Every structure is written in C-alpha cells, then in structure tokens.
Image (spheres, rainbow, N blue to C red):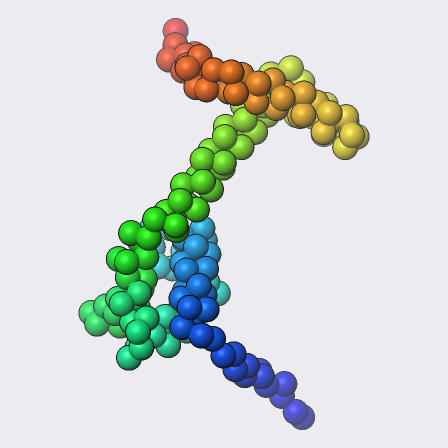
Length: 162
C-alpha cells in the first residue's frame, strides 16, 4: 500500500515581494484572528502559514518585521507592522464598510421580522425574500447616507418589566 505524501513547493521572492507577502499574511491573520482571545480559537491554517512565513525572516533584512517570544516559543508580527499606515488604512476601510453593512443588515432583518413572521418569511420564494430584504436595506442606506447615526436611538424602556 502506497501512502500519498505531500509535495513540497519552493517559491522565490525578492525582498520586496516577501515583505508584501508578510503584509498580506498580516491582513489575513488580522481578519481571521483579531477577535479571538484564546490561542485555541485562532484559525489554524492562517496560524500555520503565518509561522512558516515569519520564521523565514530570521537573519534577513526583514527580521525587524517579526518578534520572537522565547517564553512561549512563538513568533509574531513586529510592532512595525502594527504602525504601518498603509495596513492601518486598509483595516480602517474594512472596519468602516463592515460596520455599515452589518448595521444595515441587522436593522433590516429586525424590521422585516416586525412585519412578517419568520415562518411566513421562510415560506416565501427566494425572489420575494430578496425583494423584501432589499426594500428594507435601501430604506436604512438612505437614512444613514442622509443623517449618519444622528437619528439612531436606543429605547431603554422597551423590553422592561412593568
């Protein structure tokens, strides 16, 4: 019986290309793991690739883009990447877009289910659901384009026991 073995690949990078790869892995790691608290919850394949890429910087001009933690025998991105204005701009742009998408999406769903039961919604065909969702989302998009969050409020009395 023959076991299938993994093939090893060799890639060649210039120093600039390797730095671009490090920055790309930084962004992937940030999206995959920024909200995780415990190492066990981190995205394993992003961690694996991150470690492979970062370990290769030892003894090179790119070594200052990494920090080795000898206490935990772990390598991580260096502070220089956290301070990188281009990376921060990409992350901020992503955060901004996701914030508005999530806010609109969640408020739209809430409004939809105030007007129709989830059971009735589930019975609708996909075109009807999309149409209903888009109508509600458009309303919220217009609201936020015109007024931002100025008119958004929390009703602290809603849901209180009487």
